[in-house]
Length: 112
Image 1 (spheres, rainbow, N blue to C red):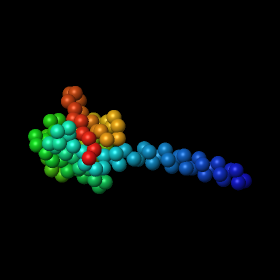
Image 2 (cartoon, helix red, strand yellow):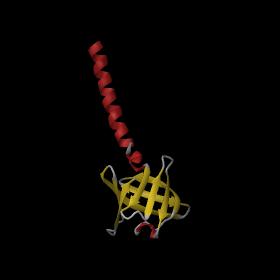
Image 3 (cartoon, one colour):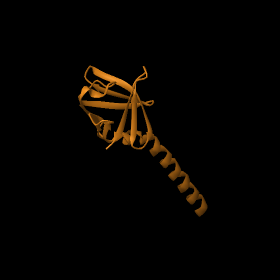
Image 4 (spheres, rainbow, N blue to C red):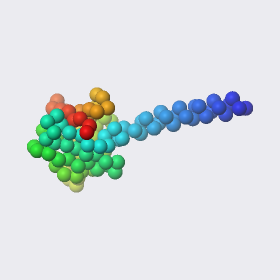
């Protein structure tokens, strides 16, 4: 009986660990990210808000101000009212975020 409870506990811990990894994608964004020359930045918070600022904002991301963001299928959507844009995203490593559009333009950001 004790072995069954221990095995059930281990299985439950593994399941919770796997599920929390799936839900953890948003936490990768939280914080401030800057482009290579520091002229533009995105600051993500845990309330699905992002502050975008900088000069000539970001080439592929022509937004500036505070926006809502949402994640689905390796895409991020920035929106506010009728204004919005959806981009692809990837994390080649923990301190780097790449945003790209379907035309091949990309923006490399580094976490500050």
